[in-house]
Amino acid sequence: MSPDYAGLFLALRPEGALVLGALTVLALDLSVFRRHSGDLRMALAAMLGGIAVIGAGVLTWMGPHGSVFGGSLMFDRLAITTRLGVLALVLVSLGIASASRAPRNAAEFVAVILFASCGFTLMAAAQQLLLGFLAIELASLSLYVLAGFEKTRPTSAEAGMKYFLFGGMAAAFLLFGFSLLYGLTGSIDLPEIASRLPADPRNPLLVVAFVMVLVAFGFKVAAAPFHLWAPDVYEGAPTASVSVVASASKLAGFAFFTRLLWVGMPTAAGSVAALPVSAGWLPALAAISLFSMLVGNFGALAQQNIRRLLAYSAIAHSGALMLGVMAAGEFGSAPVFYYAATYGLAASGAFGVIAVVERTGPCQKISDLAGLHRRSPLLAGCLGIFILSLAGIPPLAGFFGKFYVFATALRLGGLAGPAGWLVVLAIALSALALYYYLVVLKQALVADPDPEAGPIKVPILAAIALVTAAGLVVLFGVAPSLLLNLP
Image (cartoon, rainbow, N blue to C red; front, side):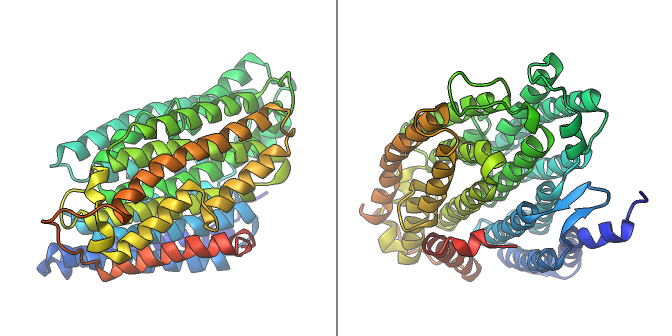
């Protein structure tokens, strides 16, 4: 079959819009914006980047459906909804960037975010090992730059270095796993790999291959025990960078690896429906899920730094999301997408509030949020919605996301099976998580502010981004079908 380059061009129009937007931002900053102040240059760059993201979203909605370019790209429901979700989360992050302390090179910062977005959107549709790896690396290299963008600040430089070192190791694991899959099957296309995998999931090379893949998966979504980069990156990286890492990156990562595992390696899945478990990658994924929920929730309990608390919270949420990945082969990927997308909205919104507070002073400790309800009722209200959604309180989207994932995982074998035990533990740990989330809310909504702390002025772009994100968290919790019934 001859390659359909015309179809490929039409399918990649959203990525073209993002690249064109990045180049436009750089060109205008070099020629027109240079005479403006740093804050205004940041706001203008974020606005132009937002226009490019909106254009990419429209082109995604109008784009092709089904297989493209010989099956290298698959634009099914998971791909299209993930691409739209990623672009929406990037749009929120750009609004947050406009409120953050302006970096020295504002246009470059926005351009790198747009390049990372290209990687995320390609990850969502990739159905080939080589294309998937290139998409992951395009996104990852951009995120390393974003994490260390404030190179004159030691904590940011440290965050970028640690992220790069861990990411480089994870890339090596992933490429090694992909090479073994190619060696076992002679193909890099996921459907063909599935049809040619050895019948015995205990094949030594196959076991090594899916261990390598799961290690890379764990790093990408910050799951324990591959999470060691996350607390330091969340603490040291620029706030807008952390917003992208915590939201769009996580959504794209779960979408790609759900497709990789269930389209490319379904015969090696095994089973966790009952004891004894069947050999395969599902029992290993269950163990990672268990460890992530334990490490994330108990680690968050010990934190006094708001950024590190949100990092450990992200680890715990990754563990819960893996329950949805485990059930995706039988019951579909909608629970994973809904949970990851609504978690991304709440997490990026929380970092947006931190970014605005940082304009008036440091916001590292939880106590730095004291009296936020008096300093800015808008920020306090938005933060309350985001934190309560992360805690899974109804009627917010976080509650329905957890409910949907847990209910789906229970269908794997009921309460009597290992999957059921994981769900019970996840529910118990969600109750534990409510404690450290309430500690944050107590400072923001109950505690008195520092006498020297004045009111906080919220920039207009940041206010629009935060109010929109908070409104969507409420809307998708009250009417989840609006998100679940996307194309």
